[in-house]
Length: 300
Image (tube, rainbow, N blue to C red; front, side, top):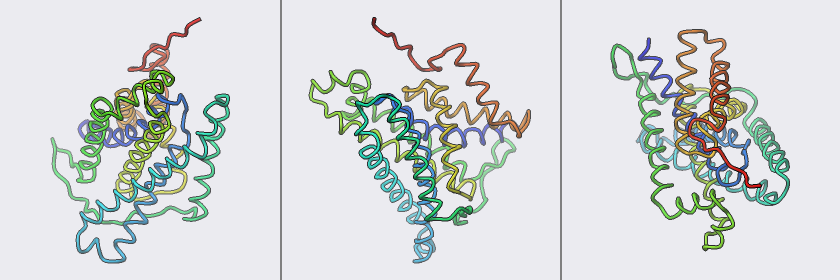
């Protein structure tokens, strides 16, 4: 039981962490909560179904399933990154100097628009992800772990490690950290603020697309409202780890997944969502900035 719930928690936590990274990256640079981010995750799931359905229709999945999956991931990431880039330019960029409430309202408006757009174009009923994966797996300490779970855990770990290396080692990553610290000083030393912000939305949306695809493959069903619940939980994970902290979002997502999994198994599955929020409230009482967050000192 313990091993099974541990695997389930790591699988779910990896997905939450990927979505939470988009929240925390945008907040770290713009101090904006992108409430439309959950809908990008939802779009990734739908795009996975659309592209895999197309590749199945033309016979590519029969010829080479790995190639079809790779192309599906690449195309879904490209499309979702384009959505994220477009949303930033249309809904957020014109409001950068506006009162903080204005971009928040804009974010909620984009979220509602995307939900209704998908509902009207894809229908209000659940969509079934193509059953291309066998339920086969491996035995681990008396527990059966499916290949889908192994893939989700491994892919999440690789993507999180790659993002951390990107932020700490690359020129663009250092520019992101500089903009997050002080936009004015960053611009004075030659950093293009608009490019950095666009890159942040593109990367965050790409990670959300991968999370959407993995969840669609894991559960087999998607609908237009899955982005709302996943977005709220991923935002909770980001706050739990410390909003604005990339390691905090990773840890918060994993912790949230484990809390949900173990509470559903050992306490009650009916209130598994409530336990995560209870833990969040307790941690914020003890450390208001989150587990990895830093307290911001205001100058007077």
